[in-house]
Image (cartoon, one colour):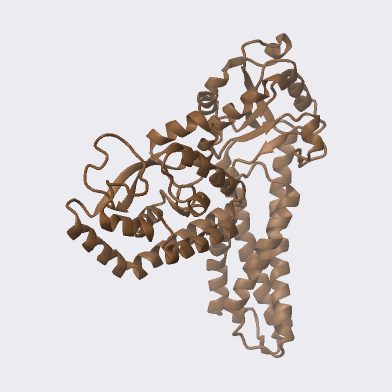
Amino acid sequence: MNKRLQRAKYIAWDAFAAMLAWGLFFFLRKTAIEKTDFVGIGQILCDVNFWRGVLILPLAWCCFYAVQGTYRDVYRKARLKELQMTVWASLIGTIVIFFTLLLDDKINTYQSYYISFLMLLGLHFSLTYIGRVIITSHTAKLVHTRKIGFPTLLIGSKDKAYRTYLDLENQAVHSGNIFVGFVTVNGSVNAELEKVMPCLGTASDINDLIGKYGIEEVIFAIEDYENDKINKIIMSLDRRDDVIIKITPDLRDIVYGSVKISSIFHSPLITINPRAMEEWQYSVKRLMDIVISLLALVLLSPVFLVTALIVKFTSPGPVFYAQERIGYRGKPFKMHKFRSMYVDAESSGPALSKDDDPRITPFGKIMRKYRLDEIPQFYNVLKGTMSIVGPRPERQYFIDLIVERAPEYLLLQKVKPGITSWGQVKFGYAENVDEMVERLRYDLLYLENMSLTTDIKILLYTVLIIIQGRGK
């Protein structure tokens, strides 16, 4: 599959549709709404607003669609979901165009505004969706006829795995899964399964196999008595946001409503969404990070300067402290803070801070109380290694200790770490591994409820804690 070519098809059509919609709208407005002033097609071609719209609007629309996530998963588009996304995007985009480009136009009656708005909305939506549905329908046909598909790894090697393979292969409408092989969980293999696909190794080899074969989907089909091993395997996979995980359900899952299907012809599978939020929310979250960080660094610059001077003159050593933390997808990065401890405070090894910690300077205690030591982390946010809101990053040393007791901690590495978090708001700084595991519950809750609304609530509570000086 050539995803770049497929993505280029959507972008090219969206740009063309936006250009054509604006051109037709401009012509119909002049001839049908402002017809008393219309003298000929040359009037349109000489209008600078016509050319601005034709040349600039297609680019703006495509950027908007990219933020919305339209061009992310171009081979798995559903026509109904495409309709929904196109309706909302067209409505929001047309409102923006109306208020920025059309509201100051000379009109005969206010009814002309409504007609203009509906005309532009109808033209843009219709032309955009027609092209998209043609491309999507053609792609779906190629998937259903097995001409293109998604490299798939089957987890399991017994009867349930073989039945799952048969179910997916014998679907009335093929779902696009192309099995490259299977891996065993406990070593034994169904002889029939081995005839239809190769055994590629064991569950411990999954991450290597994903990279080697370009796996896009992983399907769990292990026996019921092996279900306790699912969590451990998923922990090693879930830091990836480019692999779709599916699990064959049992009757209990169906009764509890865990099974959601996108097509009545496809086999029922539980799908674990690799992305915590919709693509447009990620884009808005990143925009919020940049705007808030810039504002914070500008507005807090006097506080920044005064804090730096006090740190410099109240204890020997550097003003700033950079420490390696583990971030998104398990990648290490340098997190910056104002130094709140004495130099060589951890000469005897990594340790967590606590109340009345002798390693913390007198001014360091004040900084921590009002979170002043965290201000330099806005620089990390601008760099993209952190977010304003997200699970607090930890050092590898403590991560290893946490994972021994709570392997689900690795799920937090699905998202960027943050300056503040749900766990930070509810629990504060942890003084030992027990408290870190306790705080983990709140960070996992954040992961399951991640949204822009949740981020705003956490930010408001963080500001309240800072104002009240309840940090520790």
